[in-house]
Image (tube, rainbow over all chains, first blue to last red; front, side):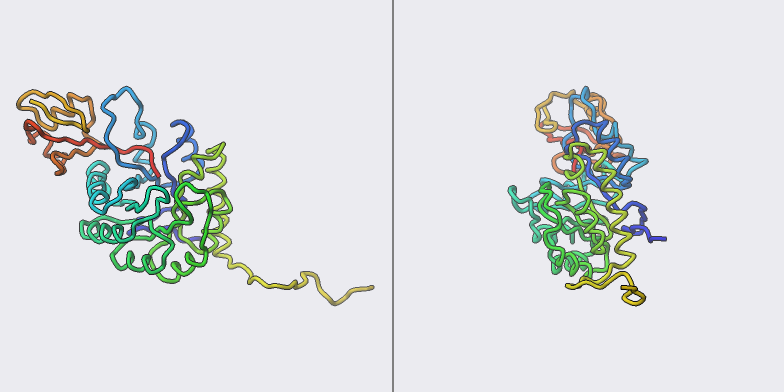
Length: 256
Length: 66
């Protein structure tokens, strides 16, 4: 039996975390979330729509069924991210947050200086901090030292679908920190998710890879299977890569 | 008196509280968070937090995101 994903003492059977943005409509999102098997879903914190005639996300995502993980998307400073987390905690009654401090509009790469500062403050305030960070082992170690409950290095830019650009850095991060490592952002298709898990990551977080697919529900199912297959392959222990062949059939006993 | 709610000016009666504002807007008390002049108002304090002229109120909730 595989061990569950553990974040600050809470355990989860699914190692796939999914976002709730960018779906064509709510019914598609609901079916995709179900197909993904995810237990943790990310949400953003925004001004409530004062015109209540429109549907809202929480009409469709049941917080009793899913663990809502509020993000600090669109925060470009530590102060904005901290303010967002305080509001999220008040709205959601949970202290787990996906911390993002964005450095640049074009790349959406993290501003790790602001990220680390925000993480330190939020940990002191009692938050369970899951930071979206670079694939930088040194920063991962600093975030762990700051008390983050996991580190979430990007595979590639958010929404890019480029897959894992630097598997070697992810491997080094896995050797560097003891907290769970969750690849967050850049996954484009099932094999990307499988690779992340084969490397030994504890989980994968994605949004656009599913929501942006032609058939989000089918892709959600593919991602669930890929995360599961990748995890199994990691635990099974792959064979070493070799340049030349080694025969699978015996050399002895041939009759020709 | 006039306050600003989520960036929009709005007239409210004297003696209004955070709770009466939420009711007036038809908003639930759960799954929202309220800031008054950049300070979070705890849910337990909604009935007792009086609004003043010029207050800036933010009411947020969860929306789809990654």
